[in-house]
Image 1 (cartoon, helix red, strand yellow):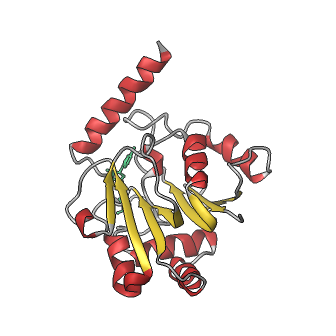
Image 2 (image 1 turned 180 degrees about the vertical axis):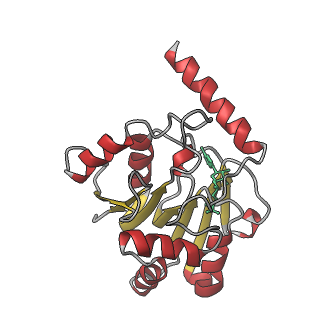
Amino acid sequence: MKKTGQRTKRAELLRFIRRGAEVGGGKHTSIPVTWRDFHDYSNLFQNHAGIDLHTLLSEKISQSSTPVVVTDFGCGKGNALAGLKRIFGPKIKTVGYDARYHSGMRELDEHHVKDLLSATFVKSDVIFSVGTLGYVGEIKKMLDKTAKSLNRNGVALLHFNRIGTKPGNAYDSLLKGAETFFERVSKGEIKINGVSAEVHRFADVPKSDFIVILKKRQ
Ligand SMILES: C[S@@+](CC[C@H](N)C(=O)[O-])C[C@H]1O[C@@H](n2cnc3c(N)ncnc32)[C@H](O)[C@@H]1O
């Protein structure tokens, strides 16, 4: 019974997404009004987790003889990856995942129109996600899947947004239990698939979004 209910709810969510119901920024003081390009992504992770995406990629490129695989979960039009490609060219391979096809995705080196929960992820060196994981839910499953898909020394920068997850809308229960869950991750009581995990909040906003940084050592 429960499983069928969950499947129905997921199917409803995916229908909602495919109708084009994207939720933009702007209601939150601490994230960019739009987060459409990599500068915005970099700012988000820099301001709230002290990691600059551009610097991280430069480091990875300097340590690698093959293209660094950079993956965006919930890439939308793929603008963030396209911006990175303009800077780093063939030194990176861009991979985007989204539940809905957006024009622009085909410009990426690889794109997958798939629900993140059921998709099989390519192995990546850097993964990022902005404004998406709050609509996906199943936090532990997403973290474990992400960790598993990281290459050695890989890093994942994951934003769990709360915009759009307010009570009464289609997403209200997806981050249920997140406060306790992430507190336990921070204390090391919950382990994520062989990686270290840091949890960050927006310092100036109570009950804000979560930013999770996963690092794989081997
Ligand atoms: C608010 S938009 C953010 C897009 C982009 N990351 C950005 O910052 O501009 C959320 C994106 O997540 C995608 N999405 C939501 N749930 C998803 C799921 N379960 N699997 C894959 N993509 C999903 C939506 O289709 C949408 O493109």
